[in-house]
Length: 403
Image (cartoon, rainbow, N blue to C red; front, side):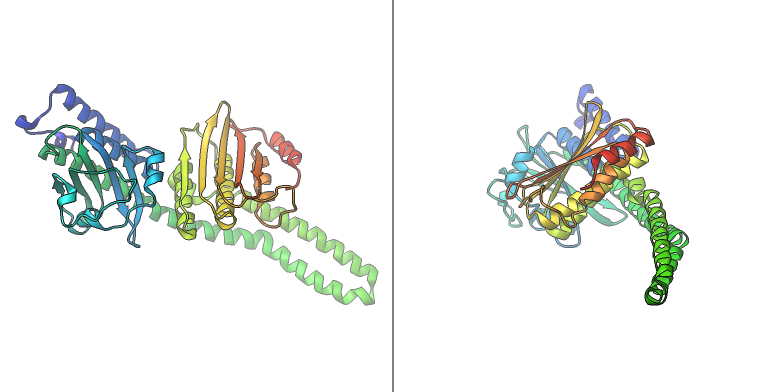
């Protein structure tokens, strides 16, 4: 969008400082859209800028899904505890549904007096004047931006509507880019599946065929020629070991294609949202600014987070949160739930704990699992902010021992 669209008529133009703020905010949004930030981070920048420039107490940006709810819903003006008290995300009804259906701006002096008003939960702040603007691209309505409760008397103005519409246009660009990234990711997944199938066939399947043939021969030789049968069994063990090593090499070389498309932060949020919808539980994700991580450590963090999130959703029965942060010279991933918990000293079947520990050790990290029955579980991965040598990684992996 041409920056000139931020210009306002002379009679409605703010002073120099106000105009500078407009350009600063628009510039921030343009940079966010062009960067490698996740789409949710970009939308957060957009809704924060729209709220600030429109002089609103609250603002929200919603992107609908196909089930009557929202694939993305970001807010500004409420802290985390206030959002939690409000409860689940809204549905596509009331004034939100009006903007999504009609695709036209809505500006009201008091939303409560409009017959299309649906109401809100008990903990929701009371809204009066509102401004809703659709996010459109090529005739398609992608979502909306809502601003509420003007901080100055008189309600929202034509100028406010033009400013919010400007940010809605940038939101449309961000969402369109996200769709293109997703299509590229799906193509990468298909290509990676084909490569993996070829590698598995070349490296593993032929050895497994030999194992199967030798196992059948051994069964025949057990009674006829026990000594020969023992030789065949030893050969089976050797072939199985080679197949395992080659399979491990294939797996280690398999970088998740979604990481290339969405980056670590975006991929974690995407997986958490998908897994949460599958199990009907919201997964809250917080990612701090991190130093650049090399591909092996990104893959390790992502795979361990996947396993831990999946375990929490399948077994805990409680809310799940994910935090990825930098602490001094370490990167720390924490996946916590408020569910049933388990006895970490008892033998574990499944849960992928051994795999997570092995993967942590492969990049010089450590994995700690804290859980008490009835109080939930925390999986904590700590790894150095800088990569470690392969020899050191192997040493740490051996020190971790079995799950």
